[in-house]
Length: 238
Image 1: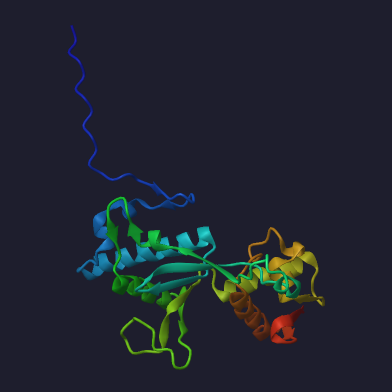
Image 2: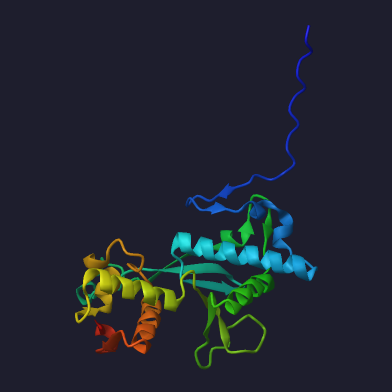
């Protein structure tokens, strides 16, 4: 007569994945409490920053987040929405959003294990991303003393997250121009980011400011010319 098998020993390891309500799959490190504490050993800290940087880029790419607000009042993000047309401004039933802000706190705060990255450590991650050209602080406007970074510098709390750099967006635009035979044609910036002709491309819905950064790169390459007024700019591709 064989003896019954012993019950399985429960695992002490955290789950390998942590999926958010939006379908984003967090890496297994996100379930480890030490991941949210700055490591004192330089080698371990560098590895930690590499993983945090990868997480920030992946998270922002999944949600198409272009900017993060990392103020002490909370972490929010901006994703691009189509600008309101002039006719819509006369219709009180049509809202006039330019960006959609939503709480991006879950990126740095794992509520399941009650751990979060401190604001100073978030800035450390952003600075690490900056060294690789993947982040850029947006300078404060003149007279704005609201920054909470405590450094006394002219950087604010809003930062570009470049999961694609302006140069990479420029290359995508250039490839699309070649593939669709748009050389010599003139398109408005609205058509590029919200027109039917670009639907299905990665740059459809691109943040307007980031689009202009990408187009400025193409201008430097001699591949485009920008003209027109601020509210009706167009671009000609060469």
